[in-house]
Amino acid sequence: DLLFTEKVSGANRPRPQLSTMLESLQDGDLVLVTRLDRFARSTLDMLTLTEAITAKGAAFRSLAEPWADTTTPHGRMIVTVLAGVAEFERSLIRQRTGEGRERAKSQGVRFGRPPALTPAQESEAVRLAEANGNRYAAEIMGVSIATVERVRARARKVT
Image 1 (cartoon, rainbow, N blue to C red):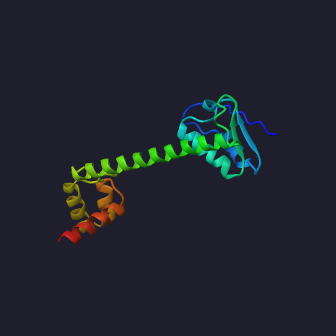
Image 2 (spheres, rainbow, N blue to C red):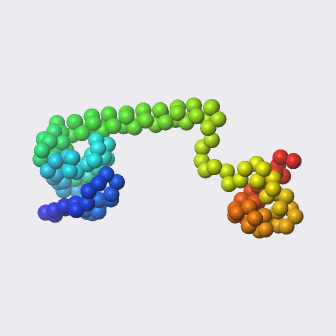
Image 3 (cartoon, one colour):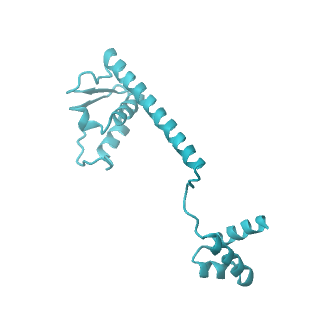
């Protein structure tokens, strides 16, 4: 029997003892927790962890929440239903995110990093590079040589 006790707390901190426990699981092991709120940070986290546990052939049980027990048919059914609900919720989030992204694109919102140079600065970079070379233009404009090369390539396509 192994006992894993986490010494850290916080929503975004890594949990090394949990990782060690998950890595050491073998077929037939039982993960026993005192309470779910000490084991998982959210329903999705709990379902992800129980899926990882059962994928290794181990079982999961919570002492405070008797329904959270993958060793019984009733417990497995409840965990499976919750997993289905969580998957449905994830798909709804993905759908809403995609719709929001499309709506933003249709309104002209640009995604990604802002351009390194404004159109006027790009024109100046091309002029400097043609007169003095890419390295010189990059130093003067405060960008990389690769940026100057990309700007020049775009300028050649336009003309």
